[in-house]
Amino acid sequence: MGRTWNRGRAVPSMVVIGLTGSLVGATPVVADDGAEVPAMELEWGLCPEDVEDGALPLECATLPVPMDYDDPQGAEIEIMVSRLASANPETRRGVLLLNPGGPGAPGLSMPADLASLGAPNGLLDSYDLIGVDTRGVGHSTPVSCGFTADQEYMGNVPPYAVDDAAIDAQAEIARGVAEQCADSDDELIPHLSTPNMARDLDRIRAALGEETASYFGLSYGSALGAAYASLFPERTDRVVLDSNIGDTFLDYDGMRRFALGFEETFPDFAEWTALRDGSYGLGDSPEEVRATYDEIATGLDEEPVAGFDGRLFRFGTFVGLYDPSSYAGTAQMWEALRAGDEAEVRRHLDENGPVGVSVQDDTAPAEPAIADNTWSAFISVTCNDAEWPEDLDTYREGVAQDRERHPMYGAATANVMPCAYWEYEPAEAPVEIVDEGPDNVLIVQNLRDPATPHLGGVMLDERFGDRSRLVSVDASGHGAYIYGDNPCAWNVTTRYLVGGEFPDRDVACEAAPSAGLDLDAEAELLRDRTLTRLGNPA
Image 1: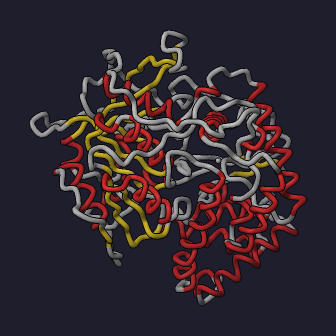
Image 2 (image 1 turned 90 degrees about the vertical axis):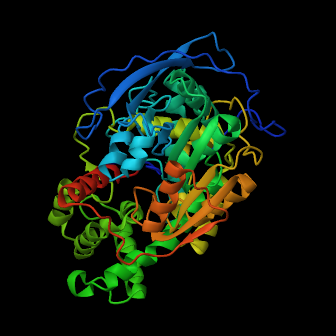
Image 3 (image 1 turned 180 degrees about the vertical axis):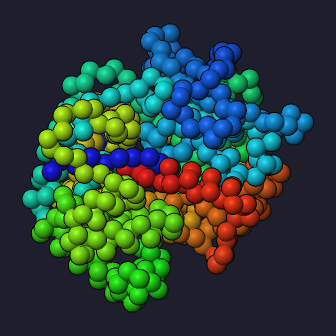
């Protein structure tokens, strides 16, 4: 059976760069020279039909930007932006630029998503919320490597390698994907990078007629926001970075930290499941639940169920840790897989797909993959942003190390990526985070996050120095503000964005046993539906 992996919010929603040249000695990208960009007036109109607006007055516009900022008079591409305008001009502060993660996650619906998730009226009144399909993504000028539905590619997180032969097999797939992207002749690919997307954000700010812009980004959006706040520090107003990857780029070390996040977050699922052993029968202690994980994974490595092998099981469990609301669906899937119930596995995937995967019949025609654009953008940005190892032995060593350090998932996230064979030279080094500038960066981070562990927030806070404050939230899942429900995280962040209350020191938010938001039944249903639609990373 061939397999495809469907993607929603990115790992962020959401991932080794082989270079024909070298970045050794390259100068990091630093803050701009202060020159203002040319402003263009945006013409607002209806958004494309596939942009979820939640029945809110969301409007869209396109902005031309240089494809290559080193050749600003050359070819242009289009960036589509959305706007949920403040309904209260008297309290409007400015614009809040948004990014949901990725790289590669579409962002036009994010303003409406935040409103549907229960964003405070004070936030909605204070800002025009601005969503963006970043360069190469969605309704902006799109990028494509030509992925097909029958292609043996398992998405942005590489598959778990049970042995060295599996690493070699993944290396061949990764090499093929890198060659496929190069052979696509898509001239946009080498210009997809975090520095260029940060420059695009500043073009958007100027087109909106604003001297400064506030920003809220999650997952990879934390990297883009850190780059924007470093390249254009004096053009930022209030910046919130949530679920942080730790720098302005994702490299091999950053990818390997996913396994740390898995190990730190899994105990929450294990405890939840153990308390319900009478329902699911997966173990009456967290230790027994972990042993059941190993049992199921090893069994599926040897004998898949309905095309669902150990690689998919481990990935599915990883995705199931993104939000505690996914625990029940993940436990159901464990039950079916442990029993070898093919009909139940297929039914579960068809009806729920809670683990983020689908099984593709090999007899189906080779149609374009649903995730072609998302995967293509992710690979291009990730591979263009930073140096990745080129030597296959480095990956063998990394997999061996992480199989010992983080046995549940380390042999996946240390495995080979297409970046190992990338054929494009990076145009510039990564953006260097600057600790000089306004003290305006609030870093919000759950203590237990499967994709972006707490360490990422600590790393980012250290790099920003006195410019930032770290809000550590005793909660589990990917996304703390709006996407999570810890009251302290909401209150600290809202007070900053709306009232300008920047903490004097770092903040520790205690766990809230019953943190449920104060929503009526209709609002709660809307929030649940929005989280379900967003919560399926690749």
